[in-house]
Length: 254
Image 1 (cartoon, rainbow, N blue to C red):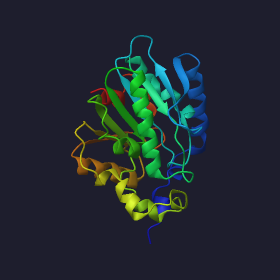
Image 2: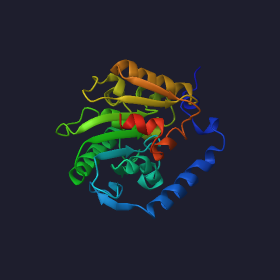
Image 3: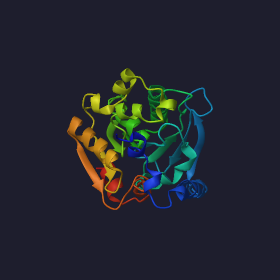
Image 4: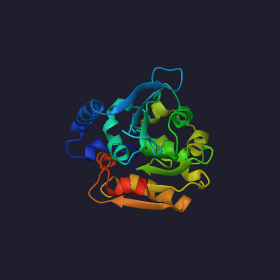
């Protein structure tokens, strides 16, 4: 019998996995000390419905919105500030929202919350908009790939996305998700029509097989490119967002 919890486990298969959250927090906190930023901009009524917006030192060319992962159950915006570095260096503003977490809300509600954050951020920064998200955040930005931003949405980059939620119904995490079959199908990007906006899927070549399979499935469903990044696993596949000339950032701005 297939152990679905093991299939979707990441930390147990990454060396020194327990060190990553503290490392992210430290890098993010240090980054916030020397950049122009609006912190805790509310986009809704709840205490977690806040975002940070980082601005370049000149008029922004456009807006990147980064949506974090954590299986819709963990983390907030403050852990990921440093990932704005790559886009900022290219002259783009970056918004990073927090959102309510399961089990306090359903996954479908998170999609609605992040959509509200994107819309508000787009009123504060002129120019085109591009979305990038990791893991659960990859699912969210893929769900938002068809959102109406008056033609401003230019590209969506799901990184290691959870593109098919049905298998997650067989994990212990579903005690928090409380996914029904109807919601799992509706919130799975693989079941949605391919959006008009360009989509590029990114995944680490060293990730668990299920994440490579999910990324590949989304690429097949939408007819979009899927890049397997060499020497990257689920926890470090996002590191290159902080590097202005990395292959991931170059693709985000292609």
